[in-house]
Length: 110
Image 1: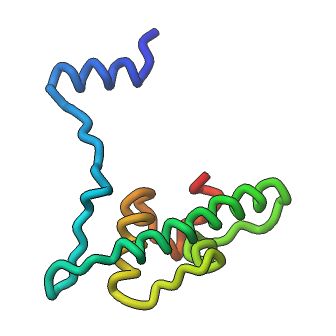
Image 2: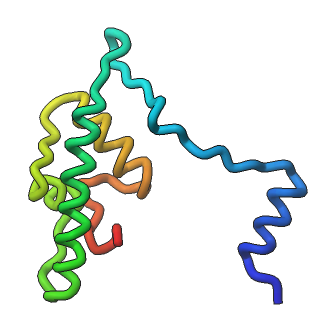
């Protein structure tokens, strides 16, 4: 029996599909006014996400009630208080998991 992964790999070769890794080091950020560097804000999100991951594991181990992704980020110190924060959260959460952070459950992210 051929696995789905093997079939997918064969099709990607057949049709010439390639995976191109994202170069996050060269990520450029913009607002409606043009380029705006906000790598420090992305780092703040990443720090809050690390707390979310750690707490999600504890939630499972201790059988605590689940919470939304947005609540988990808030516990890590993240606040979505402007357009830049909304864009970062969309890029990091909504884009990655195809879910809104206010409805997506933390245990689903593990």
